Amino acid sequence: MATIREIRRRIIAIKSTQKITRAMQMVAAAKLRRAQENILKARPYAIQLDNIIAQVAIRSKRDLHPLLTERGNDRKLLLVLVTADSGLCGGFNSNIIKRARNYIDEHKGSEIDMFCIGRKGRDFFRKTDLKITAEKIMFFNHLKYSDAVETISGIKKLFLEEQYDRVDVMYNEFKSAIQQNLVTKQFLPLVPAEPEEDVLLTEYIYEPDEYSVFDTLIPYHLEVQMWRIMLESFASEMGAKMTAMDAATENASDLLNTLSITYNRARQALITKEISEIVGGAESLRT
Image 1 (cartoon, rainbow, N blue to C red):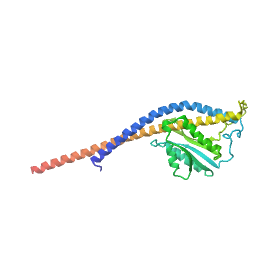
Image 2: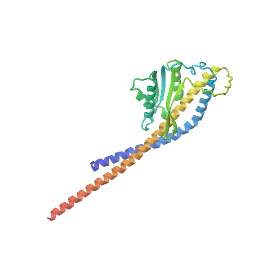
Image 3: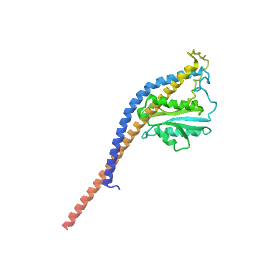
Image 4: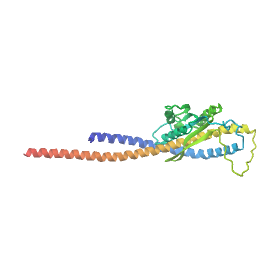
Protein backbone atom coordinates (compact mmCIF):
# COMPACT_ATOMS: atom_id res chain seq x y z
CA MET A 1 0.00 0.00 0.00
CA ALA A 2 1.24 3.50 -0.87
CA THR A 3 2.51 5.59 2.02
CA ILE A 4 0.88 8.87 3.06
CA ARG A 5 3.80 10.83 1.61
CA GLU A 6 3.46 9.08 -1.78
CA ILE A 7 -0.30 9.71 -1.86
CA ARG A 8 0.24 13.38 -0.99
CA ARG A 9 2.77 13.72 -3.81
CA ARG A 10 0.34 12.17 -6.28
CA ILE A 11 -2.42 14.53 -5.17
CA ILE A 12 -0.16 17.57 -5.64
CA ALA A 13 0.94 16.33 -9.10
CA ILE A 14 -2.64 15.68 -10.25
CA LYS A 15 -3.78 19.11 -9.02
CA SER A 16 -0.99 20.73 -11.06
CA THR A 17 -1.99 18.70 -14.12
CA GLN A 18 -5.63 19.64 -13.62
CA LYS A 19 -4.74 23.34 -13.60
CA ILE A 20 -2.94 22.87 -16.94
CA THR A 21 -5.79 20.94 -18.57
CA ARG A 22 -8.35 23.50 -17.34
CA ALA A 23 -6.26 26.36 -18.75
CA MET A 24 -5.85 24.53 -22.07
CA GLN A 25 -9.60 23.94 -22.19
CA MET A 26 -10.29 27.65 -21.72
CA VAL A 27 -7.75 28.63 -24.39
CA ALA A 28 -9.19 26.08 -26.85
CA ALA A 29 -12.72 27.35 -26.12
CA ALA A 30 -11.69 30.94 -26.90
CA LYS A 31 -9.95 29.89 -30.12
CA LEU A 32 -12.94 27.73 -31.07
CA ARG A 33 -15.32 30.69 -30.85
CA ARG A 34 -13.18 32.72 -33.23
CA ALA A 35 -12.60 29.77 -35.56
CA GLN A 36 -16.31 28.97 -35.61
CA GLU A 37 -17.17 32.55 -36.50
CA ASN A 38 -14.62 32.49 -39.33
CA ILE A 39 -15.83 29.22 -40.81
CA LEU A 40 -19.49 30.25 -40.63
CA LYS A 41 -18.60 33.39 -42.57
CA ALA A 42 -16.43 31.66 -45.18
CA ARG A 43 -18.41 28.45 -45.73
CA PRO A 44 -21.49 29.85 -47.59
CA TYR A 45 -19.30 31.80 -50.04
CA ALA A 46 -16.99 28.83 -50.65
CA ILE A 47 -19.88 26.41 -51.19
CA GLN A 48 -21.70 28.75 -53.57
CA LEU A 49 -18.52 29.44 -55.54
CA ASP A 50 -17.92 25.69 -55.78
CA ASN A 51 -21.44 25.21 -57.15
CA ILE A 52 -20.97 27.99 -59.71
CA ILE A 53 -17.67 26.57 -60.96
CA ALA A 54 -19.20 23.09 -61.20
CA GLN A 55 -22.14 24.44 -63.20
CA VAL A 56 -19.90 26.44 -65.53
CA ALA A 57 -17.52 23.50 -66.03
CA ILE A 58 -20.33 21.21 -67.17
CA ARG A 59 -20.99 23.56 -70.10
CA SER A 60 -17.37 23.50 -71.25
CA LYS A 61 -15.03 20.94 -72.72
CA ARG A 62 -12.84 19.14 -70.19
CA ASP A 63 -9.72 19.84 -72.22
CA LEU A 64 -10.37 23.59 -72.37
CA HIS A 65 -8.18 24.27 -69.34
CA PRO A 66 -5.39 22.10 -67.87
CA LEU A 67 -6.98 22.21 -64.40
CA LEU A 68 -10.12 20.65 -65.88
CA THR A 69 -8.43 18.09 -68.10
CA GLU A 70 -8.63 14.47 -66.98
CA ARG A 71 -5.42 12.49 -67.46
CA GLY A 72 -7.23 9.27 -68.31
CA ASN A 73 -5.61 7.20 -65.54
CA ASP A 74 -4.81 7.31 -61.86
CA ARG A 75 -1.33 5.85 -61.90
CA LYS A 76 0.16 8.61 -59.76
CA LEU A 77 -1.84 10.35 -57.03
CA LEU A 78 -1.10 13.21 -54.67
CA LEU A 79 -2.90 13.08 -51.33
CA VAL A 80 -3.19 16.44 -49.56
CA LEU A 81 -3.57 15.52 -45.88
CA VAL A 82 -4.65 18.20 -43.41
CA THR A 83 -3.85 17.44 -39.75
CA ALA A 84 -3.00 19.55 -36.70
CA ASP A 85 0.35 20.99 -35.70
CA SER A 86 -0.05 19.81 -32.11
CA GLY A 87 -1.54 16.95 -30.14
CA LEU A 88 -3.70 16.73 -26.99
CA CYS A 89 -6.88 16.84 -29.10
CA GLY A 90 -8.30 13.36 -28.61
CA GLY A 91 -8.61 11.24 -31.73
CA PHE A 92 -8.47 14.22 -34.11
CA ASN A 93 -5.10 13.32 -35.63
CA SER A 94 -5.18 9.56 -35.20
CA ASN A 95 -8.57 9.23 -36.92
CA ILE A 96 -7.55 11.12 -40.06
CA ILE A 97 -4.17 9.35 -40.22
CA LYS A 98 -6.01 6.02 -40.00
CA ARG A 99 -8.31 7.15 -42.84
CA ALA A 100 -5.25 8.14 -44.89
CA ARG A 101 -3.73 4.69 -44.39
CA ASN A 102 -6.99 3.10 -45.53
CA TYR A 103 -6.93 5.37 -48.59
CA ILE A 104 -3.41 4.19 -49.39
CA ASP A 105 -4.46 0.55 -49.04
CA GLU A 106 -7.44 1.13 -51.35
CA HIS A 107 -5.15 2.56 -54.07
CA LYS A 108 -2.36 -0.01 -53.96
CA GLY A 109 -2.26 -0.08 -57.75
CA SER A 110 -1.28 3.60 -57.85
CA GLU A 111 1.83 5.46 -56.79
CA ILE A 112 0.88 7.83 -53.96
CA ASP A 113 2.81 10.84 -52.69
CA MET A 114 1.86 13.06 -49.77
CA PHE A 115 1.41 16.80 -49.40
CA CYS A 116 1.26 17.22 -45.62
CA ILE A 117 -0.47 20.25 -44.10
CA GLY A 118 0.11 20.09 -40.35
CA ARG A 119 3.01 18.68 -38.35
CA LYS A 120 1.31 15.56 -36.98
CA GLY A 121 0.62 14.06 -40.40
CA ARG A 122 4.11 14.98 -41.58
CA ASP A 123 5.75 13.35 -38.56
CA PHE A 124 3.78 10.13 -38.96
CA PHE A 125 4.27 9.57 -42.70
CA ARG A 126 7.92 10.61 -42.54
CA LYS A 127 8.48 7.24 -40.84
CA THR A 128 6.92 5.33 -43.75
CA ASP A 129 8.08 4.57 -47.27
CA LEU A 130 5.74 7.16 -48.77
CA LYS A 131 7.28 10.22 -50.37
CA ILE A 132 6.35 13.58 -48.84
CA THR A 133 6.47 15.88 -51.85
CA ALA A 134 5.78 19.06 -49.88
CA GLU A 135 4.75 20.19 -46.42
CA LYS A 136 3.32 23.21 -44.65
CA ILE A 137 3.51 23.16 -40.87
CA MET A 138 3.37 25.32 -37.74
CA PHE A 139 1.06 28.03 -39.09
CA PHE A 140 -2.46 27.26 -37.82
CA ASN A 141 -2.19 29.51 -34.76
CA HIS A 142 -1.56 32.45 -37.11
CA LEU A 143 -3.69 31.28 -40.04
CA LYS A 144 -3.98 33.77 -42.92
CA TYR A 145 -5.51 33.68 -46.39
CA SER A 146 -1.99 33.91 -47.82
CA ASP A 147 -1.34 30.43 -46.38
CA ALA A 148 -4.07 29.04 -48.65
CA VAL A 149 -2.67 30.97 -51.63
CA GLU A 150 0.83 29.62 -51.00
CA THR A 151 -0.44 26.05 -50.61
CA ILE A 152 -2.51 26.17 -53.79
CA SER A 153 0.43 27.60 -55.69
CA GLY A 154 2.47 24.52 -54.78
CA ILE A 155 -0.30 22.03 -55.55
CA LYS A 156 -1.19 23.68 -58.85
CA LYS A 157 2.47 23.71 -59.94
CA LEU A 158 2.83 19.98 -59.26
CA PHE A 159 -0.37 19.19 -61.17
CA LEU A 160 0.35 21.41 -64.17
CA GLU A 161 3.80 19.89 -64.52
CA GLU A 162 1.92 16.58 -64.98
CA GLN A 163 3.70 14.98 -62.06
CA TYR A 164 0.33 13.66 -60.86
CA ASP A 165 -2.81 12.39 -62.58
CA ARG A 166 -5.11 13.35 -59.72
CA VAL A 167 -4.99 15.33 -56.50
CA ASP A 168 -7.21 14.30 -53.58
CA VAL A 169 -7.65 16.19 -50.32
CA MET A 170 -8.49 14.74 -46.90
CA TYR A 171 -9.53 16.90 -43.93
CA ASN A 172 -11.85 17.23 -40.94
CA GLU A 173 -15.04 19.17 -41.59
CA PHE A 174 -16.35 21.06 -38.57
CA LYS A 175 -19.86 20.18 -37.39
CA SER A 176 -19.78 21.01 -33.69
CA ALA A 177 -17.37 21.04 -30.77
CA ILE A 178 -17.90 17.30 -30.28
CA GLN A 179 -18.37 16.22 -33.91
CA GLN A 180 -16.11 16.36 -36.94
CA ASN A 181 -16.67 14.67 -40.28
CA LEU A 182 -13.76 13.17 -42.19
CA VAL A 183 -13.95 14.28 -45.83
CA THR A 184 -12.06 12.86 -48.80
CA LYS A 185 -12.67 14.39 -52.21
CA GLN A 186 -11.04 14.97 -55.55
CA PHE A 187 -9.40 18.36 -55.71
CA LEU A 188 -7.81 18.32 -59.17
CA PRO A 189 -8.82 18.07 -61.92
CA LEU A 190 -12.01 19.92 -61.05
CA VAL A 191 -15.15 17.81 -61.15
CA PRO A 192 -18.08 19.34 -63.09
CA ALA A 193 -21.59 19.10 -61.71
CA GLU A 194 -23.75 16.13 -62.64
CA PRO A 195 -26.18 17.13 -65.43
CA GLU A 196 -29.81 17.08 -64.43
CA GLU A 197 -32.09 14.88 -66.51
CA ASP A 198 -34.34 16.55 -69.09
CA VAL A 199 -32.85 19.97 -68.37
CA LEU A 200 -31.39 22.02 -71.19
CA LEU A 201 -28.11 23.66 -70.25
CA THR A 202 -28.00 27.40 -70.84
CA GLU A 203 -25.00 28.52 -72.86
CA TYR A 204 -22.97 31.33 -71.34
CA ILE A 205 -21.38 34.24 -73.17
CA TYR A 206 -17.75 34.76 -72.08
CA GLU A 207 -15.81 38.00 -72.20
CA PRO A 208 -13.08 38.26 -73.39
CA ASP A 209 -13.13 34.47 -74.03
CA GLU A 210 -13.89 31.23 -72.28
CA TYR A 211 -10.28 30.24 -71.53
CA SER A 212 -9.42 33.63 -69.98
CA VAL A 213 -12.42 33.41 -67.67
CA PHE A 214 -11.44 29.92 -66.53
CA ASP A 215 -7.78 30.87 -66.17
CA THR A 216 -8.75 33.61 -63.71
CA LEU A 217 -11.68 31.97 -61.96
CA ILE A 218 -10.34 28.44 -61.31
CA PRO A 219 -7.17 29.42 -59.40
CA TYR A 220 -9.22 31.81 -57.28
CA HIS A 221 -11.77 29.07 -56.68
CA LEU A 222 -9.02 26.69 -55.53
CA GLU A 223 -7.65 29.29 -53.11
CA VAL A 224 -11.09 29.86 -51.59
CA GLN A 225 -11.68 26.11 -51.21
CA MET A 226 -8.28 25.59 -49.55
CA TRP A 227 -8.96 28.54 -47.24
CA ARG A 228 -12.24 26.91 -46.23
CA ILE A 229 -10.53 23.53 -45.72
CA MET A 230 -7.92 25.09 -43.42
CA LEU A 231 -10.60 26.92 -41.43
CA GLU A 232 -12.68 23.73 -41.14
CA SER A 233 -9.68 21.76 -39.92
CA PHE A 234 -8.62 24.38 -37.37
CA ALA A 235 -12.14 24.75 -35.95
CA SER A 236 -12.42 20.95 -35.72
CA GLU A 237 -9.05 20.76 -33.96
CA MET A 238 -10.04 23.37 -31.37
CA GLY A 239 -13.36 21.61 -30.75
CA ALA A 240 -11.60 18.27 -30.28
CA LYS A 241 -8.98 19.85 -28.01
CA MET A 242 -11.58 21.58 -25.85
CA THR A 243 -13.52 18.32 -25.48
CA ALA A 244 -10.38 16.31 -24.69
CA MET A 245 -9.15 18.80 -22.08
CA ASP A 246 -12.61 18.95 -20.47
CA ALA A 247 -12.58 15.15 -20.18
CA ALA A 248 -9.04 15.23 -18.77
CA THR A 249 -10.06 17.81 -16.16
CA GLU A 250 -13.05 15.69 -15.11
CA ASN A 251 -10.88 12.56 -14.91
CA ALA A 252 -8.41 14.44 -12.72
CA SER A 253 -11.26 15.43 -10.38
CA ASP A 254 -12.41 11.80 -10.11
CA LEU A 255 -8.87 10.65 -9.43
CA LEU A 256 -8.40 13.35 -6.78
CA ASN A 257 -11.57 12.21 -5.01
CA THR A 258 -10.35 8.62 -4.99
CA LEU A 259 -6.89 9.60 -3.73
CA SER A 260 -8.39 11.85 -1.04
CA ILE A 261 -10.40 8.93 0.31
CA THR A 262 -7.31 6.70 0.24
CA TYR A 263 -5.26 9.42 1.93
CA ASN A 264 -7.82 9.92 4.72
CA ARG A 265 -8.07 6.17 5.33
CA ALA A 266 -4.27 5.91 5.50
CA ARG A 267 -4.12 8.82 7.99
CA GLN A 268 -6.91 7.29 10.04
CA ALA A 269 -5.10 3.94 10.13
CA LEU A 270 -1.86 5.66 11.14
CA ILE A 271 -3.55 7.67 13.90
CA THR A 272 -5.33 4.56 15.17
CA LYS A 273 -2.03 2.70 15.23
CA GLU A 274 -0.32 5.53 17.15
CA ILE A 275 -3.16 5.69 19.68
CA SER A 276 -2.96 1.94 20.12
CA GLU A 277 0.77 2.18 20.72
CA ILE A 278 0.28 4.98 23.28
CA VAL A 279 -2.43 3.02 25.08
CA GLY A 280 -0.30 -0.11 25.00
CA GLY A 281 2.67 1.79 26.40
CA ALA A 282 0.54 3.29 29.17
CA GLU A 283 -0.81 -0.12 30.11
CA SER A 284 2.69 -1.56 30.25
CA LEU A 285 3.78 1.22 32.60
CA ARG A 286 0.93 0.46 35.00
CA THR A 287 2.04 -3.08 35.28
